[in-house]
Image (tube, rainbow, N blue to C red):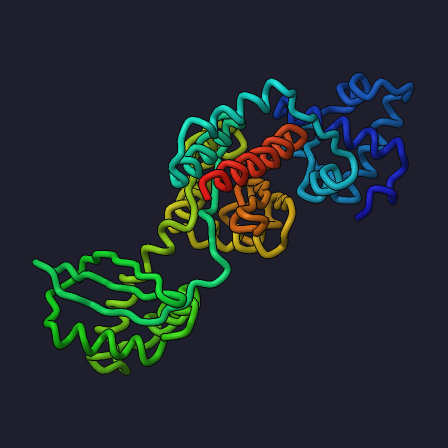
Length: 345
């Protein structure tokens, strides 16, 4: 719902309640709210407004307390309509800039950005690696190496050549490798690497009994050859910071969250969504669409290289994060990362 549907008084009390809960992490009672709001209101009036906010689904009462905490809907209204952004001081910006000047290697610059976000926020920092708009497969070739290793030669776009070594489950003959390469070139040439990976995943999940040996071998080889691209799509730092927040201490919730971090697929899809949406994105709780992130908020901002958006970076933390502090940090870090990478061009 829009903030204007609430009275000015109700908006003010909601803002004060959310800010207090973010700061202390404890349910906020009417007496505390009355004191913090600095309004000449009776305790009964405060309780009535809190009841209205609860009826609207903006706050709720935990089972163990008479106080109230914000819901996802309450956080959303707060972020969209009531949030006070705290600009970074010039000294803080200068300190951040200095961090990006320490290294000249693009990969290390990106890694430092995720570590920096993690250190400053005490949450998890994540940076998507720069992504070109289209990386299309032109040709693939497999060459046998010693043991169960195979050299993969990829020709992408017009003439760019990439080499990678994969470990296979068994030794393949030169003939088998040639047949596998011919099969992949025939069926996948011209598609983007992401389309190839998605298509391979669907076919690998199909009934293998319906595949002949050549197709099984080709798909297994291709799946290994392209899996490395998924593994390096983004860098994350500070995941263990999230274990320090009381509201995220449930072991089952942590297990789901760290499984999502390990598999990367859900996080990558969320970053992809942020990339296509453009501009800063804030996902609160279940807004992400992924159960593992239900207790988290994700704040992302795009970064540019040569005036093209090539990736996003952000912070993953509890819904009770200091949005007014995190949002400008994510924004300036994205700008500094883009500037640092542009200098490397």
